[in-house]
Image 1 (cartoon, rainbow, N blue to C red):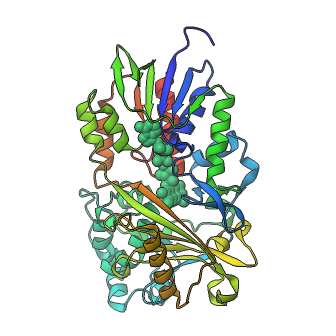
Image 2: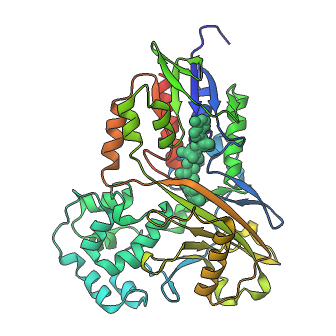
Image 3: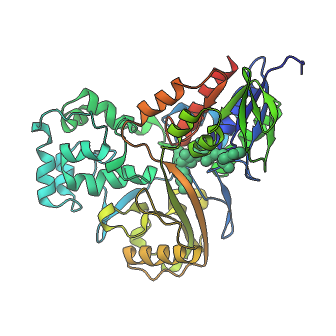
Length: 450
Ligand SMILES: Cc1cc2nc3c(=O)[nH]c(=O)nc-3n(C[C@H](O)[C@H](O)[C@H](O)COP(=O)(O)OP(=O)(O)OC[C@H]3O[C@@H](n4cnc5c(N)ncnc54)[C@H](O)[C@@H]3O)c2cc1C
């Protein structure tokens, strides 16, 4: 290490911070990298642990999108390329007084096939007829940037509430009436180009099995991706300090002081609210803007249910979603050991039940209340008396940033005002999913290194 080597501090050891540390440390003429993680565990939301005799069951995300290159790219770069698995075929359902198959031909919940929609008993006839008028409606303005507003205007309330909101909302724990349309690029791109989604969607090529899996996860769970990235960053020379909550950052000439230690550049890969606290004295306007990015809390309840009581008709399902109007606390249930072949076990099925979302707080409840709510609600949905043989409650405060309409413009303004030598990365800014977090981290690392 030469004495003139630049020093870069990374705050936050979730997947964004780890990917940034890895990207910086593996560059040619790499800077000295020090990562500060407040927790004693690296990985942030990526957390996998043993459950009911299984070595590795995720407590947070259980997969990443394969279509985006950054998740797969990082997994390969850190040596997990041969350990990626994808979900076993299995269809999801929507619960509306009973389980309904999700109709064919949807684009993130929006219909592209009127006949398939007509056959579904999830949407009542007036809702189907309203959706069928979509091709005759004038172009919808995108100015309000509301996902819910757009879908309601094009397809009506029933399609919005029973399909799009549960399908998209469950990904981000969002209430899609208050979520940015631009933050869902598959819908926003089509909406920007075409007047009618039904007409444009019908012309889109059907997804082919040759395109490969939609999702990947390491066989050791998503925590394995964090651990492998941490190992690779360390092997390349990065110092990863755990139990190191950064209390203060301050400018020092053209560099930064991090809790009294000098660095040439600073990458904040902690949640936006934590970055807001750290920048409050140094960059008050940036801090104030960061503090306006809201978050939703969720709880994840994991259950082992004896196979003997698990009915045959549920065995082909990967899980189900619960639309807003019929939600109590549970928003979705994933039948994990049916979704992932390597989680399967003769004795029990593993369920991962999500509670809470934007506008539906749950963390005021204690673990026992969350567990009871999950057992009772899912039991009622499925018509079963669930008697779990093992259970686990994971509380995720600030689980998902909520991208309100015009989020992208807000982030662009925040980033434009950052001084040289400071960058932001992670779920608060350019995408909430794991691949998007990795991409934001790698871009931020490149900016700081240059
Ligand atoms: C239950 C759940 C399920 C999900 N499912 C999926 C999924 O299936 N697929 C998918 O792609 N995405 C999923 N996501 C979203 C995705 O996991 C997250 O958006 C992503 O992991 C966030 O990564 P991050 O590094 O930005 O933030 P985090 O993982 O939140 O990491 C930030 C880190 O910063 C640390 N920190 C905060 N303040 C300080 C400080 N002052 N000093 C030092 N350290 C600090 C924190 O301790 C934390 O470790 C899910 C999220 C949750 C909660």
